[in-house]
Length: 295
Image (cartoon, rainbow, N blue to C red):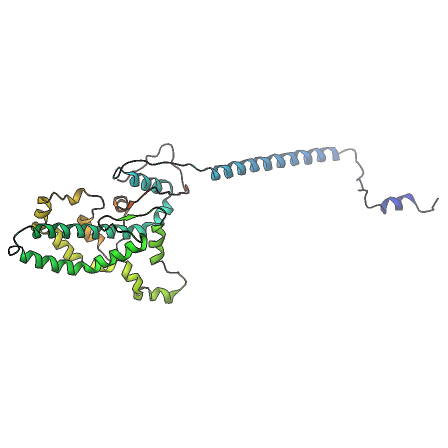
C-alpha cells in the first residue's frame, strides 16, 4: 500500500466532479429561490420558442386566390385594390411602371381617333375631304414620335406581339420589372445620373418628354367639334372605353407627372392567358376599418 494520502489521489482523478459540501441553514432558501427562477426562465424560453414557431408557420402559409371572369369584368381592379390595401409598399414600387402604361393608353386613344378619322374621310368625296386629309397627315406626322416610342415599348414588354390595336402582354413576361429597370439609375453614381437624359435608349422607350411637347396638339385634336362629331357618327364612345385618359391630358402630359392611385386603377393592359401574381402581406385590416375601394 502506497503512502500517498487519499485526498491527493482523489484530486488527481479528472473524471470525478467534485461535489460542493452541503450546508444546512440559510442556504436552503437560496437554493429554492434559484430553482424557482430557473423554472421561470425555462418557461419563458418555451413560450418564446412556441410563439416563434407559430410566427414561422404563419409566414410559410400561402393563401391562393383564383380570380375568374370575362374580359372587362374587373379582375385587374380587384387585384390592384387588394395590393393597395395589403401590400402598399409593393404597390408604390410599381408606380413608375404604371406611369408608362397610362401614357401608352393615351397614345392608343390617339391612334383610334386617327383611324376613325381616316375611315370617315376615305368614305367621302375625295375632293371634299382633301383639306381634312391634309390636316390628318399633319397631325399624324406631329404624333409620329409617340407612335414610334409606343412600338419600342411594346417590343420591350411584349416582343413578337402583332396586336397593334390593344395594349396586351403575355403571361410571365415580367413587364413591370422591365419598365422599372429601364429608368432606374444607381443612386451612388452621379455621372450615370447626369448622362441619363443623354441615353438614346431611354428616350426611345420613355414617352414623357414627347407627350409633354405634343400636349397642345393633342388637346386641339380631342376638343375639335368635327372630331367629336365623326366619333359620334361612327359610334365610338371614347369616354366609356377602358384606359381612357384624354380628359385628364393636361395633368398626364406634364413633364413631372406622377400617376395617382385612381390613375393606376383605371390603367388598361390586357394579359393573353393566365397570369400569377405574388404578394407578401405587409399589413392587415382592423375589425372596425372600412377598406376604400378604387375603381
